[in-house]
Image 1 (tube, rainbow, N blue to C red):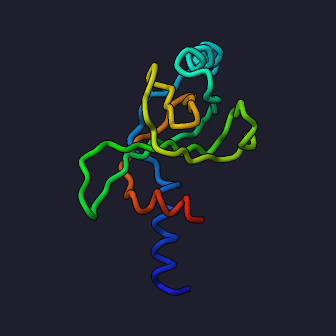
Image 2 (image 1 turned 120 degrees about the vertical axis):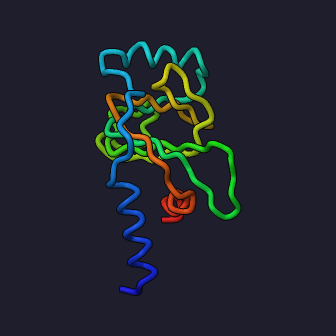
Length: 135
């Protein structure tokens, strides 16, 4: 395997598999119904996607350095996707988070991601995050 492909593969594996700092942003499954109602109050046109085993990636830009805080949600387990876009039990990587509500609702342009349980927060190189969309 060429060295550059091996390096990219290792970076992707590290991004996805190595946890960051544990955080308690998520809500419990028993709170899901009320969080769904809250999503409707925020923007009824956006479907929700409830996820477990999640990470919030805080994008780090090195070239050129950008100070803006850009976050993305990655989850290893989809609990429920209202719009049926994603398979239950599958994985998902969001687009850029535009707003956060109730600490557990991370809203993007098209979706409210409801984080269930505990997860992690970690810095991630923006180029590594973008590489997932080029697959």
